[in-house]
Length: 88
Image (cartoon, rainbow, N blue to C red; front, top):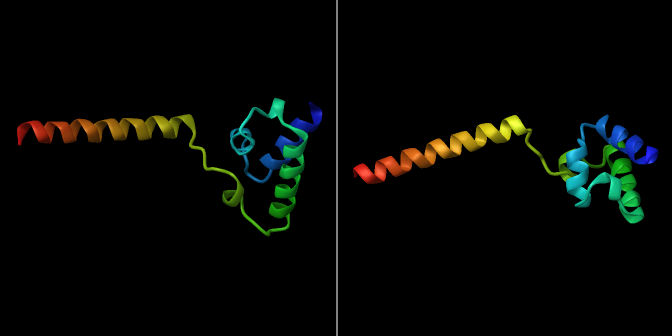
């Protein structure tokens, strides 16, 4: 368990969040498989050496605040679109 926390901290230093790690391995960090640890170590080496960037390996995950703002904007657009159709 300590090794998993250390790995998350090391990736955190590169700007990778726990949510991004979990999205990459498609499971919670606590249930990571040995092969996935090896895969993440290879990814870390590539990032550390400058051979790739975080966006090459990990999805961009918006914060909850950003997701809420996007939902509000989307809902407003739908309401405006509906209003336009009913008045036309």
